[in-house]
Every structure is written in structure tokens, then in C-alpha cells.
Amino acid sequence: MKKLVTLFMIMALTGLTAKAALAGDTLADAKKKGVLVVGCKDSLPPFGYIDEKSRQIVGYDIDFVNAIAKKMGVKVELKPVTSASRMPQLQEGHIDIIAATMTKNAERAKVIDFSSTYFFTGQKFITKKGSVKTLKDLEGKKIGTAKGSTSEQNVKKSIPSATVLSFDDYPQAFLALQQGKVAAVTTDEAILAGILAKAPNKALFEIPALQISDEPYGLGMRKGDTNFVNFVNKTIIEMEKTGEAAKIFDKWFGPSTQFHLDRTFKITADK
Ligand code: GLU
Image (cartoon, rainbow, N blue to C red; front, side):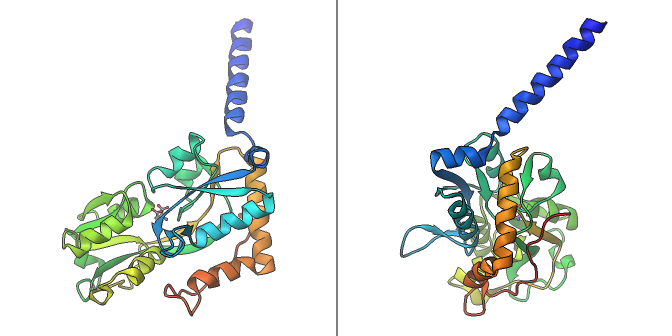
């Protein structure tokens, strides 16, 4: 019996070490390699999208990771991800950090670690102008969103009678709305505002004042990658204190931008 207990203890311990090794130390590894590999969106203005002139991926999420990489003294390599692929890409080691419009929630936090909240929004809908006044108007309707998103889960809960069509990304869902294949597209308001701002026929659509959830964004890191998580948190809280975080917000969402939003949050340490 004693032998068996010892065997179980050894198994448990080696299991733990294997797990810790998997998480690694991204802070040290990236410094050694001189590069931080970032999973980002590439079609969601103003978070991560391809700038028409430079053909580079730019945006609010990108500016945040650029500031973190600068502090580490490393270069950034951007790898486009989708809502569904971002967590597996991180866990399999293809990217080091997720900066991709990602909401922090308890379910995801079982699998990966999150930074303090660096952006705050809430889930709404884009519809044809005048077609939706209350959530009742969407009952039994087809609604487009992205696979693997909280938007997909939230809308199923809020409007159970709706048929949810999940696309790889939100621009595809918006195309379905333009083609009359869905009655609405749902995701975070800040993303919807970005899609609408860039749409050639934007006068036909609107974002009704119907919010179904709060969506706090966090940068995603491998579970147990504690040195890196602490470094990222220290950096973004410092960016809040020096005004750099507000400056990045203003660059993308300030009054002179096409995505104008008010900054209703401050970056603080999670309790
Ligand atoms: N913030 C939500 C999420 O993390 C919706 C946007 C997205 O799909 O990235 O699922």
C-alpha cells in the first residue's frame, strides 16, 4: 500500500513538472529569441486590421503589444488568428500572447491566463435601419456572429428562439446581413462600430441601443506563465499611470477618429 501511495505521489509530481514546463517562461524565452509572437485580428478595425497604405496590421491591440515588446526590448511578429483559433494557437505554442479583441471570462480563465482589463465594451447588434427596436424583434430570426466567440454564447442565451449562424469572422457575418441572409450581426459594440464606419452603405444600417452583456478585454497568455503575466500587468498599469494607455485609446477612438467612443474605464490590477 505504501509503495502504491509513493507511486501515485511520484506520478502526481512529475505530472505537475510536465505542466509547468509546458507553460515555460515566455518573458525569458522571447528575450532570448528577440521576438514576441502575437496572435491578433487582421480584419477588425480599429483593433487589428490591414492599413491600406502600409499593408501592415495596425490597431489598438497592436499598439498595446508593441508597447509591451518595446519594454521587453524585443521585436513583434504578428500572426492573424480567428476567435476560434486563438486559444489553441496559444496552447500549442504557435503564438506567445493573444491581443485579439478577447473577452476575459471564468470559462476561458480555466484554460489560459489573462492580463488586467485593457479595454471595455459590451455586446450589441447591427441591423437594417428601423428594423429592430427591442430584443423581441429578433425572436425566431437568423443572427450572424463569429465561431468561438462569447457573442455566439451570449446571443444563444438572450434570444433562444433565434437561429445563430456562426462565421469565421465578423466581416463575413456582416456580408450575410448586407445580402439579407441574416436579420442582424451581433458582437461587441466597439467591433460593430468599426465594421459600420468602414461599410460603403453604412446609411442603411444602425446599432440599436440594446446591450446584452459586458465584455472586458484581456491579453491572453499560457496558463501558469506567471513571470510573463506579471510583467505584462506591470507594464499596462504603468501605461495607464503615464497616460500612454489613454493616448493609444485616443489615437483609435478619440473624437477626431471615425470610431469615436468615450473611455469609460481605467486599467487597474485585478482583485
Ligand atoms: N470579445 C468577444 C470574444 O472574445 C467577441 C469578439 C471576438 O470574437 O473576438 O469572444
